[in-house]
Every structure is written in C-alpha cells, then in structure tokens.
Amino acid sequence: DKWRFGRFAIRMYRKYKLAAGKTAKSVLISCGTRLAPFDIDEIRELTSFDELELDKIGDRKTALFVIISDTDTTFNFLVGIMYSQLFNLLCKHANECGGKLPIHVRLILDEFANIGRIPDFQNLIATIRSREISACIILQTKSQLKSIYKVKV
Image (cartoon, rainbow, N blue to C red; front, side, top):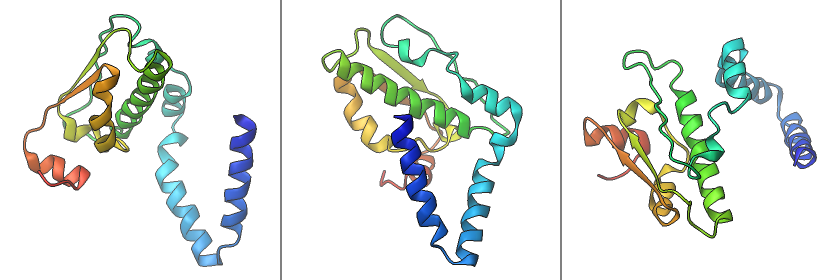
C-alpha cells in the first residue's frame, strides 16, 4: 500500500507541476492553510497513533465518550476525522465478519452540528444498519443539518 500511495502522490505532484505559476501558488496556499493545524506538535501526536483502538469497537462492549467544546470549534475537525475513520473501520470489519459486527455498535452523536462534516455521511447512514451499526443524530434544529449536508429536510 505504501508503494501504491507513493506512486499516486508522484502522479499527483506531476499534475500539480503542470499548473501555471499563479494556479500552483494558489494550490500551495490552499493546502498550507488546510493542513496548518498539523504544524502543531500535539495535533500530529494525537493523529499519529490510534490509542482508542477503534478497530476493536464492535468486537467487545465499549463506551467511548468524545467531548468537544461547545464554544470553540477550532479543532472540531479532528472529531470529524475520528468519526470518519471509525465508520470506515467498522464497515470494513463488518465485511470481514460476514457482513455484520459481532456486537452492535450504537453511536449517539449529540451536538452533531458541532462535529463538522463527516465525509459521505449521507451514504453511510443509509448503509450501516445492515452491518450492526446505528447512529442517533441529535440536533438543535433541522436547519443545522441542512447547512452542513445541503440536504432537504
């Protein structure tokens, strides 16, 4: 996998090098801005290793509490990354177990709007139940869901 990723990165870099000067600079600025939090040592350390053993959830009874500030959303994207990784790991594990997890996993996503956008959540929520995964989304208003996922509610 590392070799394939490396080749992918090289191909993407070659495409980037084809960009005109101003476009290339814009791409670099955009990437730099989006990845800036990873310049913080604590963020890099926090995301470098799975201490939570997310891949074990669904094999044993587990309670995981993810607490985020209700007033400062600066690092809430980390929770979105964690949930995205959790859903991917759970679905992959369920598929390896014949399509269902050994123990049902129920996520209670309180203050869901504060988490930030979980990639492909609309698709995940429609398919995870068959894998013994459920998610309860708690919002203050429907408009929060509309603003994050651009869906009709």
